[in-house]
Amino acid sequence: MTQAAVGVSPTRSAAGNGYKLLAQDLSKSFRNVGHGARTGVTEVLRGFDLTIQDGEFVALLGPSGCGKSTFLNIIAGLEDFDEGNLLLDGAVVRGVSKKVGVVFQNYALFPWLSVQKNVEVGLRIRGVPGRERHEIASRVLRTVGLAEFTQHLPHRLSGGMRQRVAIARALAYDPEVLVLDEPFAALDAQTREFLQNELLRIWETGEQKKTILFVTHSIDEAIFLADRIAVMTKRPGKVKSLIDVNLPRPRDDNSRATAEYGRIRAEVAAILQEEVSLGR
Image (cartoon, rainbow, N blue to C red; front, side, top):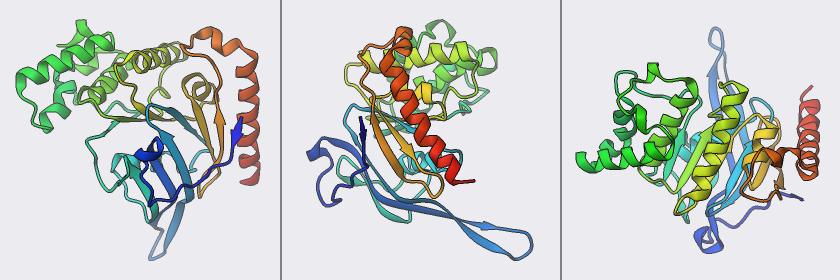
């Protein structure tokens, strides 16, 4: 079922309405410098509206360059927005929040630190005592299946294992919101599917489901993982359609073979094709 993106008054409490995150009419531009003295402005987001409920898994999908990663960076506090509103639990998001954990595509691990120490980094920054840091990191590494690799350096791990370390590091300080920027894009197909299943296992079996925003270029990945898919327009990006993914959970490889999966895939592909055609 496709829903039009609907804005909610920023003066109302997001948490009070069941929303964890609320973006309304967000705009973001970057100033760029050309050859010589020429300058210009690239408008990345315009009129971006999205609401995400507490504990919901939302995939953000759109044409290349439409502003998906920019929106993720705004939530993570790595970029600021120019106009509009962004609320987390009813409070305006400006800067890094302890409630938000981030996982990037390139792992961003410290090569000189062991797996254990990499996972402890965020806890150390937050002033968690050493013994407690060790216990938390060990527990999270067991959760992601890396208990036997705690003393390994990142270069000794496969790409999939390094990405699991990155996910473990984000989970270690127990954020309420997890944002992931194409975390499996650089992996081979088999590893990618394995980690998709692992991410769902961690999310579905946690004591408290985290709110997840997952940026991806893959229609199949979005359908398999998400409760809803937010499909964006070409740049300047905004949410064009919100599509409910009515596939039963827990999901497995059989979910990809259902008629409903095929119907959703065709619908999303048609929306994206329309946007790509408009850009020609």
